[in-house]
Amino acid sequence: MPRDDTAPVVKNPNPTFFGETPRTVFRDWLDAINVTLVNYPNGGTVYHAMAQMQLATWGHDEADLLARVQEAELSASLEGKTLPLNLEIPAFTFRISGISRVITHQIVRTRVGVVYSQRGTGDQDCRHDDALVPRSLNRPGMKSDLWDYIQAVLEAKRVYSSSVDNGHSLVAMRYVLPHCLSQYIFVNINLMALMGLVGKRLCTYETVEYNVVAKKMVEAVAKIFPDFAKYLVADCDKPGGCHYQRSFGKMYAGSVYAPDQKHDKGPWNPESYVYYDQTRDMMLDGPVFEDREYLGFERVR
Image (cartoon, rainbow, N blue to C red):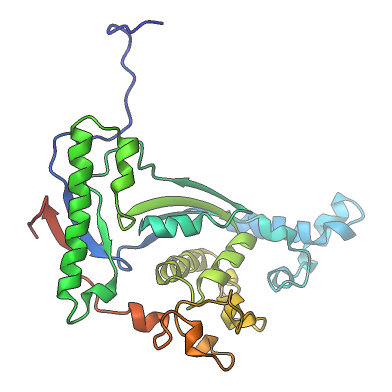
C-alpha cells in the first residue's frame, strides 16, 4: 500500500533524543549492579511438585504417588544423589541492571534452562546512557588514566549523537559506543541451571562483575527459598573444585592473572601468565568511584 498520512498513527516505542547534548553519569562498576527477583515459584506448590517428580518412578498409580509424597528427600536432588529432573521445576526471573555489555555477553553464554530478553541498543537512542568505571582507575596515582577513560567515553558519545543527528541510523552508529555503557537484561532460569551458573560465576578467578551479579542472584533467591541457599555456592568451594582448580597447570586453566590462594594448586612458572606477579583482585581492586555527571564534556556534578 502507498504512504498515507491520514492512516492511524501507531505508537512508536523507540526512545529518541535527536538534537540533545549527551548527558552521562559515570558510576562505580560494582555498586551500579542491581539484581531484582521479579518472578518466582509458589512456595506451597513447588516443593509438592518437586517431590512428586522425584518419586514418580516408584508410584503404583497417581493415588499411591500422592500418598507417598512425604517420603521425598529434596535435599538428595539438590546434592546430586538423584536424577535432577525436579530441579528444573522451580524457575526464577531476574532483572539485572547496571552492568556492562561485556557482562551481558557472558550472561547469555548459559544456554540450557534459561531464557533472556535484553535492552536493544539498535532500537533506541543511547546518548544519555550511564557509563561504568572500574575501580582500578580510581586508585591513587591514576588520575590521568581516569581522565583519559572519561574523555574517551564522552568523545565516543559525541561522535554517536552527532552522527545520529546528521541522519545516520541508530543501528549503524551503535558500533561506536563503548562496552562500558550501562545495560539491563532479564534472565528466566530454572533451579538446576542456576546452580550451575552461580557455581561457575562465583569463582574468584572469574570476572569480578559477574561475581557480584551471581552473589546478588543467590541472595535474592535465598530470601524466598532459604533451603536452596547452601546449594548455590561456588564450585571452587565444593569437593570437586572449579574448572580452574581441576585444570591447574594446563593452558586452558586461566592464563591472565596469577592464581590466588584458592586456585594455587601446584608449582607454576611466571611465564605462564600475562600478569604473573598479580592476582585478579590485586589488578582490579580500588576505591569505590563516586558518581560524576557530564553534559557533553562539561562536568555538572
